[in-house]
Image (cartoon, rainbow, N blue to C red; front, side):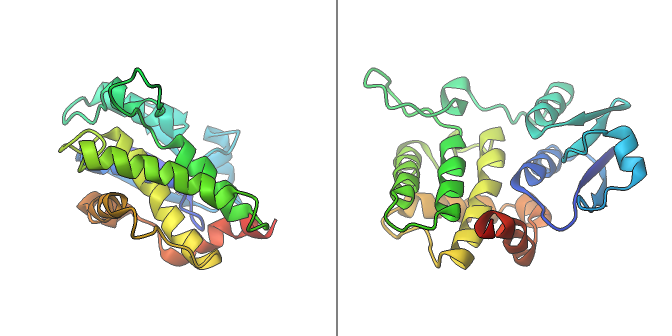
Length: 217
């Protein structure tokens, strides 16, 4: 049984990534909600830096979604969620490469840049569109998921980020993924409809409130 803690108000994409991993591997866990603005003493005693998400594995508390998901994969390799290295690395359009490499990191960073932008002409929207277009093309040739027909860790990382993108940009920018990216739209629909995703996704209002400081700051 896992003892798992995360921020009650803003259920971030990194927390959902870990929950998705546990759900896809059919591992039982004990979910504990922590208000990050008022961290209880018991939480700080096991996690002095106060980072979320954090999980207890083999009597050891581990923070950081990268470390957590890797640790879970190593301890519970079946069913495997490993994404082949050529599909998990940051995508690169090197002319010599026979495929697009991808992990979604640039999508998330350009999303945040556009979300925080106050200048419609600063290029942040186009930067995001460029990244989304690249992924749309990748999925067109390699989908329906990043690793083809099988769901993998890369999808469990990217899916929550796209979910936050859809909600936050829709609310704060009145913006949505354009119809010119149908393969991305289909990918998002497929991931968002996974049983594990619907079970772990945060409420729309929590996502909106969670990003408010970024938008208003």
